[in-house]
Length: 163
Image (cartoon, rainbow, N blue to C red; front, top):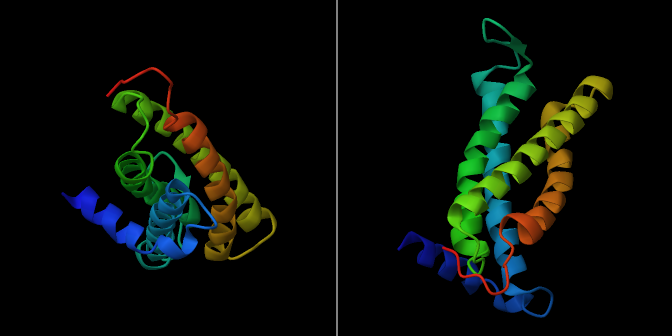
């Protein structure tokens, strides 16, 4: 099963970190880190090679290239991130899958909105390069995301064995 191979691969690197962090936090860092790298790589590819730093005309609205890249990369990150969090990181959560998905979606939309506004300020107000701005924004979002996923999306309810 793919999830077992992913867990085994991640856990292979865990022993040196055992003194510093719990296994779940390490798995989150590994999965979240991989998903973050995927999102940043996708963001850069979309921004530079697909949208070529030009506005994206939708007919009824025009998106700036960094916003278009952000929304597309976040859609990919949503799917990949949920699967990794559910099946690799927060495997002890006994909330039903649909509840996890709904809560993950709420957290995700909040993070996307926050990312959008922070990115907008960095790029359009401060005049920073979009990719650097997204890297900085990612550090902020990852911290908020971990806390919301651990304590909201995938929390463990005592006495409930939902599936």
